[in-house]
Image 1 (cartoon, rainbow, N blue to C red):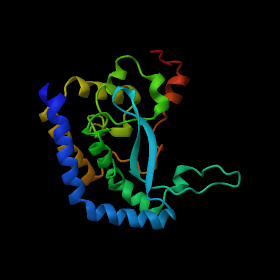
Image 2: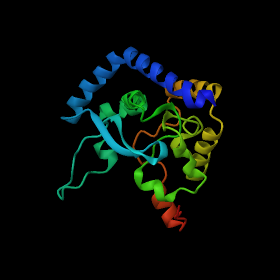
Image 3: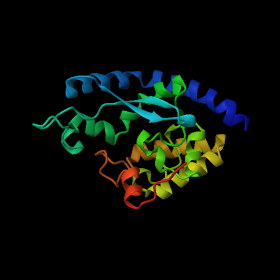
Image 4: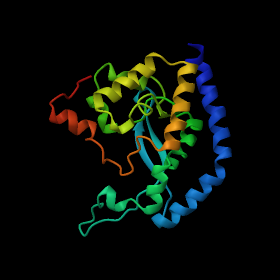
Length: 211
């Protein structure tokens, strides 16, 4: 319990600052490349629910440009994904800016991934436990199939993580994450290419949850 409520946050802060310093040359190189490829900002900001469902802005490298059709609508993700962006997603470098979220206290290094705000009404009471802790850059679901899991399995893994937080579990998840990044395991390069969004899936199945 002491780890969960004190040492975990301390370890997050120290580790994130150290990792960001070590990766700073990569950070700035990617930032410059994406600024050129996107012809604009290299960063992507999006509202996500964090601990206790408090909304924050997640920071990622922007791997897609803002190309639109004749009606002013964004083109499909696959068409907006740049060559540089595709490489950055394959190597998971797009996640690096989230270290800033960890330093700010919005996120943890290890925890349930922060999903879309619009998903909030679709969690069961048990699944909503995922928001009792800070969301993570990586987590138990990410090292056990990631986006290739069905929603029920993915969210259950999030809850199991919350119910068994420990230093040893976090170290294990961190090492598995490094392995998966190196081997590029379970990475969906095109956003949204795997499965359907939670709200669409559960609305279709008439399983909207009232909490």
